[in-house]
Image (cartoon, rainbow, N blue to C red; front, side, top):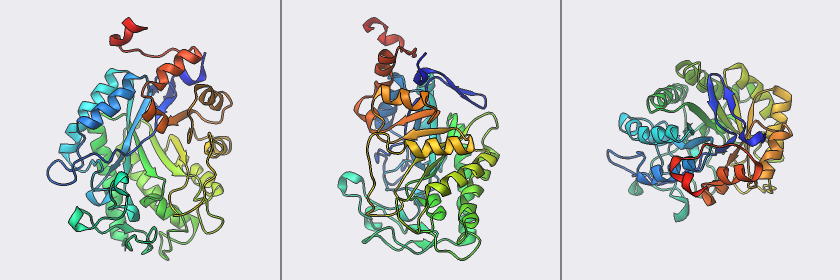
Length: 359
């Protein structure tokens, strides 16, 4: 039997296959007013298509825990009940197609308040519904970016509580998996890395101090997330810096701590915290980071990064390099990737009744 199409169980939840959709921002919500951050018909059509295409788990894009936690004013949010109610339409449909719904809970930190990518992605001000970004230290992400306001200890604790509140709402919205976004240079990743965290209090300096905020968020979310449901964490395995950055060694060390704190799977990506770095991309270029975490800590992992072919995904899993694969742009190109892969590999997959006549 194809490894890609074997079910995967974490705690009491069984995901039907191991072809999963990575969280990818759509920047398509209303930017202000009562429907700010609320999913709409675009999001429904986008995620529904991948569910009908046989994707085993769909992780909804980075969803902000507070208005100032958005990457752009057009990001999704889960800080109020209006947003929760709108999500139920999507989670209900995904479950009806046999797909597991998950959500990525996020705070953009110093990379917040930027424009949509197709408009250039530059920082936006109040006249364009922007706001003042927050961060662990007053260090801008790049030239032309504002200096973020350094968070106080009380503000850090408030944000930790916002992650927990968002997790409660995610459960109410019908999600079966919560993922904490600690990757790509957003707030939690900013605290982890010495490149972006220059604090001299209990949240900066040593590895233990820089990891403190992330672990406090994990503990707060795990305390409100049902014990029978899995909790994921997304991490950038490296900043791709030669010095003074987060490294693969740090990731392995941190993964062991996450396992102790109740995280069930590490979603292993890379980069995003340092501007203008060279990243040696290529097919499956981030898979070795996931494989190392799995081998050295025993924590389940999902691999991501230029995974495009069915045989490539199958090999990653059959070689024991990861427990699942997360597809990003390939699922944008082909919502039915999982159904096509099942046909190629001889795997079994749920097929919507409406498609049976065309098989």
